[in-house]
Length: 177
Image 1 (cartoon, rainbow, N blue to C red):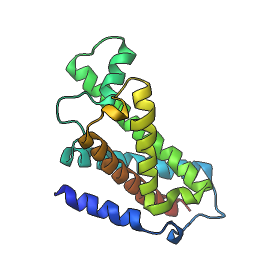
Image 2: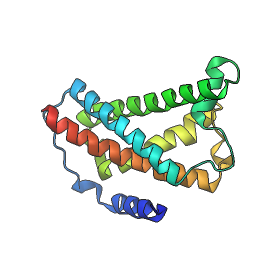
Image 3: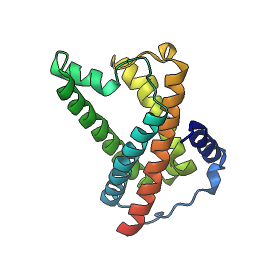
Image 4: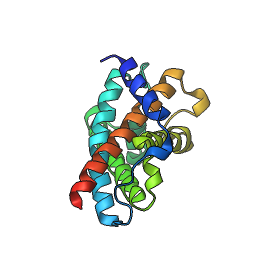
């Protein structure tokens, strides 16, 4: 798949007027149902983001992934390859699930958070993590030291994450009643 297909799709989503979003659960707010729908959305979106990163990887010169750096920091030493991979995957999938669940609850009580079919959520998540928390915690390079490739890939794949999270969240939430 050509990365232009992904970026064209994202550009169309971002061009949508925010006012035209529909809010299916207005007046039917439920914390648990929102969390469950978002959790499922976050897990599916993590798979989609992982696939998008295979097509358009953010780090192409052997830089470590932030979950790998975190796994080493938590262990207090550099882990061997297999334990590091297992720990990093666990961190990656857990973060995606928790981010999705949090988004699901937010969407229940603040429907405007779903603007642009989740693209805004993905961009916000990227800014909070890759431009804020991860550099502050020493898990990735400072934003000014990140390559253009890394920044653009992270933006594209986080928008994919956001759109998939919202699409699945909306589907699951409708079925939960």
